[in-house]
Every structure is written in C-alpha cells, then in structure tokens.
Image (tube, rainbow, N blue to C red):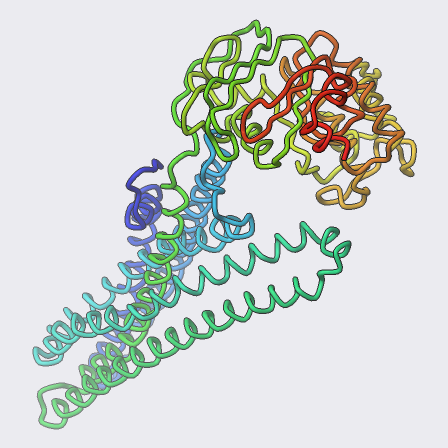
Length: 573
C-alpha cells in the first residue's frame, strides 16, 4: 500500500480488494441463506393452500420435508458465509496493522512526527479493526440485497401491488439510511481522534511516571489526563447518540414500511385478490424483510465508521518520509571519517566539522538544541536544510538509511529498554535465555558490560544478568538504565558510535570508570561523545565546542578548560 496522495477511499478499496475472494464467497453463501429465508414463508403458504386446506396428508409430509431440507441448507450457508466474512474482516485488519507498523518503522521515518505513540497504537488497532469490519458489512449488505430481491420477486408473483411497494420503497429506505449515517460518520471520526489523543496522553504519562513523581507533578498530570479523557468521553457520547438516532429512525421507517405491506396484503385478502396461503406468504415475506432492512441500517453504521477510520489510517500511511533518497549500500570497509559542511538544521547555523577516523572525539555545546540537531543529522533522522554530511567522503543522502544507522550508530540517552532480561537488552539474541544457559561466555558482551559498568548492575540484581528489567526497564534506577543502554551500544560495536550524555544519572566515581572503559573498548574506532561532562571529555583525543551553532573552539579538554571562557562556562560551571 503506497503513500503520497493516499485517501481513505483508497484504504477502503484496498482492504476490500485484498479480501475479494472471501467477500465473494461469503456473499454467495449469505445470499443462499437469504434465499432460503425468503422462500420459507412462500413454502408455508404453499403448505397452507395445497396440504392443509386440501386435507392431503401425503402432500403435507412432502412439503414439511422440503421445509426441513430448506432449513438445513440455509443454516449451513449462514455458518459458512459468516465464517468467510469474519475471516475477511480479520485478515484485512491484520494487513492494515502490518502496513501501519511498516510505515511507522520505516527507516526514512516521518510517521511518528506530531503523533504520540498511544495515538499510533490506536490507529493500528481500533481504526484497522473498523476498516476490516467493512468486509463483513459489505458481505452482509449484498446478502440482504439478495434477500430483498427474492422477496420482491416472490411478492410480485403473489401480488403485483405488494411487489411494486417493495421494489419502489426499498431504494427510498436505503437513501434515507445513507443520509442518516452522515452525522454518525462525522462524529465517529471525532470520537476516534479524541480516543487516540487520550491513549497517547496515557502512554506518555505512564512512560514518564518516574520523572513526574520526582518533580511532584502527579496532580498536574492527572488533571491533564482528566481533561483529555473528558473530551474523549464527550466525543464518544456524541457518536453514540448519533448512532442511536440513526438506528432508531431507520427502524421506525422500516417498521412503517413493513406495516404498509401488511396492511395492503390484508386489504387484498379481504377483497379476494389473495388466497389464505398467499396472505400467509405475503405477511411472512413482509416480516422477513425486517431482517434485511435492519441489516442495511447496521451496514450503513459500519460503513460510516469504516470511512472515518480509513481516513485516519490514510493520514498515517500517506505522511511523507522525514528523509528522502538514499539507495546505495554502505561500503563494506568503513574508516569512519565524518565531515559536515555548511550544515543548517535546528540550532546548527552553517556548521563545519571534521571528525577524524579512529579517534575519540568529544563535542560540548552551549545550546542543547545544537546537540539534538547534530544527532539528527548523524543518525539521518532528518536531513540538513542546507549543507552536507559525509561518511568517508560519501554524502549520507546517498546511503540507505537502515544500513547507515547500523554503521553510524547514534545512541540517544533516552532510548528504550525492552521487557526481558538485562542480558537480552545488551545482546537481543540472548533475550529470554537464562544467564546459566547461555553456553560459552561471550567476550564482546562481557567487555561491553564492564566498560559501561553494567556488570556491577548485574551483580546487584537477584538473578544477575538474567534478571528481568520490567517494561521499559522500569525496575532499574535511572543510572542503571543508562549503563545498560551504553552497554548495548558498545556491544553492537559499529564502525562509528555516537553517544549522547550517557552518564548524567551516575555518580562521579562511576562516571570516571565508564569514561575510561569507553576509551579502552573503542580504541582505534571512531567514537563521538556529545556531552558537557568533564570526566568524559577529559579522556577524548579532541574536543569541539559548538557555540551559536558553529565551532567555537577546539583542542584537548585541558587546553580548552585553560584558555576558553565559553568552554569553561558550558563544561565546568
């Protein structure tokens, strides 16, 4: 499913076409069921006229057997048709969820911009489910239409006036039902928007619960969620009122329509135009029509909600990527030299910067916005507004983003830990494996754990590295989380590693050990430490100070601390 000018109609069309065989099979089987249901009152009328009125026991048994066979057929056709329809609905919803997840995880990014994670989760679950349900609604609508058509033909053969009432009245009912579904469609879209917003705020608050408690801001957070949840509740109630009005009015119109058919049939029976059996068939067919017409009311509601959800899914799938181009593979041999020329993005104002291959470089900033923009450029989360970023002389815009990020690993300080063991977070292949069952020791993992001082974290846990860290690592302290995240980045061992403030939550003694560990483990490989920590900057080969979005000074930590006032203010103050 592509992006670009994607619309909600395109999403709906794709969901239906992808399950065309199941929808077609379900429609045929459902139509057979409706055919059987419509023929039941006709057969009952025949029984009344030919068997009961004629007092013929043999004919009575024969027609009762025909009725029995009819019920068996319509029962099985309903079961198999409903199964095909439900399978189509679930498969379509599944495909939409996969498409949304692929778009969100696309290496070129963009889908997550201006959207909370909870909002995206809501689109991938509730909206995908509603769009998938359109397949079941479509199958049911086709089956109901077949039932109405059979009933109309049967009534035409029984009585021309009754048949004409059905043929002329049904399209009017469908048109009125479509008009009544419009308010529901608008309010359903608003309901999903508010529900997604509430889910996003809830996920955001849960993720930052530790920080909120530390700041004493729990009450403010509760009030924020209460307001968002209240808006969502109000939108849901408005949508529920619209749905109840739509359903109630359609049922009232349907009931009046059925009453009209019964009244006309009764008048025709009184003046002798219909036999007793034909009257029974006509009344039975009129009562049968109540089911298909109610189905049409439900189908209208499902289509209204499906259209609203399809538009929201299209908004996610059609969002342009944050970075464009880049199809070349990363070279097999990477020296690790980085060069920025005239880079403008965020806080960067025409930055010229060279990072030597195989060296440990520290970057200090006077404005945190410069650090964020630099990390975005190096990790190619965003392309510069102007200027260029190169790896070994090759512009990053020419390289495949996924391969580039495996080569130039940008380890953010606020990255997430996964639910599972500490060992599984450092080396994902070890996820779910007990420390005692890991077989041969892995020297690279042990070295990375020691360099990040994460081995000390493992020793403090009840089951060592096999101890679960909880969802998002919430069972660990801030300093422990930082050390595990750093160990994961070091264990990956990329040709170029960029780490951002990896030690803000640890004590000075631990920070000094980590600084020395990084230097020793990354010896001979390009490493960039973006931080204002004196302990980390002191072990680097070279330090660059970014001031005003440009290089303000460069040299060793000791030289800059002695000679540059801006550096002393940023790092030592």
